[in-house]
Image 1 (cartoon, rainbow, N blue to C red):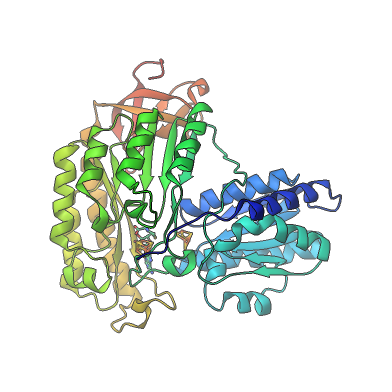
Image 2 (tube, protein in one colour):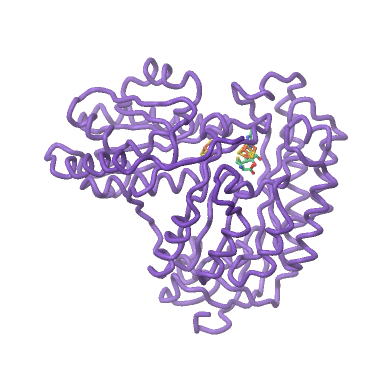
Length: 472
Ligand code: SAH
Ligand code: SF4
Ligand code: F3S
């Protein structure tokens, strides 16, 4: 029997609110902050929670990180390069601290949760003023208050979480029309290569009523798009007793009438026919599905502990397409997993050619200490790994080009985000398939969903013309 998730008691959360009010009254608190975020949407949303708390404590966002009084790095450790990038930037602040002695530096997030990291921070990074793990995020106000009052290093990392879900703390959402909404924390899957279950703890699903109420509040505030977040949304609710699973949850939010709903990530093993039917029958669920396959060979999938086969994955892809013919599929792929032979790598290439994803994130396997794959033999040389990933990228690039060409002439519904980075006269946003579309239009369209007729396919984006200025 799985452990049933419960919320952190309200009295404990109230202590954090009190800490926020006390910090607000302090004169010596940092005036401005900068949150630097690495990693996935989970981390992006955690940073919004940190910002929510910082604002409540009276700090204002700094112009840039050079001018902030408090810089916090929300780190990722899923691959070695993510970790190196974060540590490199933290070290850069060491220099800045020499000229700005009042500057405070903090690190949090997944990297802090890695075994041995606290000891490393203590020894190698003496200029870090504060460090806390993913399970301590809700405790940030108290830690921040301690850092200011006690003028010493504050380090708090609990190992795997027995603690449960924090509710009722502020969130600062940077966009008024797009929002992330966490539906569950953690992961139980223990894919052999992946560190996430070790640094994020076990699956804990939020109360469906709270999720529904938050979605409603966001919709009432005018949010156009909500992305439901979890490492494996398909197993939402398995740790709860109320019987609400992901299909019902998604259906209830769809009925609410939020203009566009997305969700991520889905584990293929838990993708049910019920969920496919909800997406097919939904009115607002975007026809875009990120379904990470990781590999195309059964021996490797088994070694990865993914618990599906190439064929069962392909069957689900076909079932999805039968129900939602225009669905846009995307995926994550790993090359150079320990012991991957040339023929096994070719299986990934042929799977990509068979599914014809709209796009794919491709990664070279990166050993993570403490995961089973890190102890496996058959490490692939860097040069060979690089050849494989280049080949896979080239295959996917060709398919993306061919898929995108088919979009020409169609009308897509674009949630307008901002002027395009390359051409300020153009607007840029994401269509229902989660593809970036650029088109000529006024800034007054920002935050609206507008119809755009696709005229041109670029390498990773589409170009179009406004079909009508009236928002749909
Ligand atoms: N929960 C999500 C993914 C989280 S991590 C899921 O299961 O799909 C995002 C992606 O990083 C994974 O899908 C995988 O492709 C990649 N990844 C994870 N660990 C990795 C490692 N050790 N080396 C290379 N890529 C990795
Ligand atoms: Fe990592 Fe697998 Fe969990 Fe995704 S499902 S977070 S890849 S362990
Ligand atoms: Fe990275 Fe943590 Fe996300 S390791 S990918 S930030 S869950």
